[in-house]
Length: 328
Image: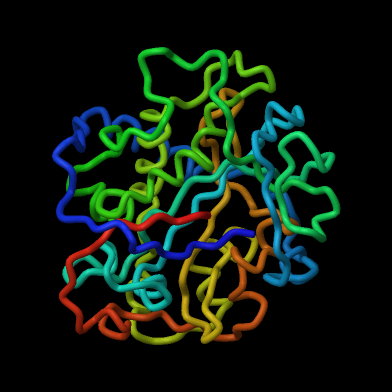
């Protein structure tokens, strides 16, 4: 099941000097392309009544499968973009991280990860790369931990290379957990590696590590934080109003604490024919909107609290951040 615990065992003193700043012209081209795709419209994948008819909203746990594209012949067909409401995440985690430090934690959505996933879960055998909790019924909801495909360039890093992570001021605002806490190390190995696979044989080029980071950051930067969400900081809003900030209940999955405090927002995008991020789409009921991790707000919250930085347990602490690793 997806979760994002914090590991504070590794101390961090400052951002590595090896972080390579992106040329703004290059980032601008990628951002403009992804923004155009993200804002494109299409015929809805589900009808208007499907929000209420989706069974088990925010109530189920799902699992992924190791190397599923190659091992089970199952190319992914969508992406999930997960972003944290930073004060909400910091209220559930250790404060000695970069993203939760005073002066860094902001009332904004910041990058968690971009996850290759399946619109419809894939049925697999309980061998050869199967990984998941009991009760999945042999279903795989996303590929993870993919091996290097045959097409991958020999001059591009396959193992995590922090120097490939964007490190300019805009990247810092959009993804402090990546630029300051090293979250990309886990996100690349578990999820990004599968974005390199377009076909089951690994012959058709997908994303390199460098291109995956560029596309991920460009998408997160292009979407930004809904202004209505910023204005709601420090108060509470109805679940319906919060969903409407993202286009409605089929367009977003919202994760909450047991106190109905917003922690995360997940939006869904088609996978284009060449394996890149495509246009925005409805998030599937099964696998995303019925997920306890992705959409717990919809399961138990009529109203959702939008914490401000000052309302978190980290507010009074002036800490030296440490590196943390997420395992989602």
